[in-house]
Length: 299
Image (tube, rainbow, N blue to C red; front, side, top):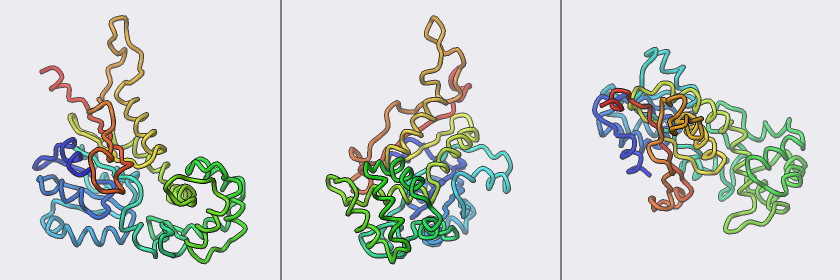
């Protein structure tokens, strides 16, 4: 959804932007080509190395700063360099990246056998270590809530019984033996999603960012989030709706009792299935929030 991101974020020369999920650097490159000053964040040292090589001229020119860390911690990192810096644009492209999925040694996928890891930040304890101290009820709740797996209790039992796992393929086969049937996907897919979300605290990171990042937007600044499953998109939709006054009390004339500081750029999410030929982008949802500029409203 690169073209949609550029269209809706409206990058311009000298604007201050944050890319909270640098990944392969595609979005960052498109923003930098339009002249922005960019602070980019990623937890994955491999992603940072690859993107830095791709974007080396911008690093050398001083328009790009790369930070290793979670996007939920972006404000603290920015304040350590430029306290109170207002932002004209913020982008979060959530979920796992293609390079992470494609590299067996990262342990995100069971298409190729790899270690039971799944961590985005290589400094974190891998999934195999996290499972060592997990109890059945807690693991079943994670698999149910983050993966929507109907047979979460049985899946949790199988995972805990088989510890320690030799690799992702053996884990996937065991999970598939007791998981509920699926259409068009491997039976272990829901459980692998749930474990990845849990071990990387993906929803907790997102919740923090949805509170902290909008407050740093300059008037007219925009915050775009691309999500890939309903757990993420629901949080974004609710947070953006609350900030823009959706469902807030109105007076007898239909005007909001408290004037919101933000607005939805488009009321409905843009869908990857309608706009992006990349098969991995089909489930993408793009939502954009804008901080209202009072000078423009009164013009």
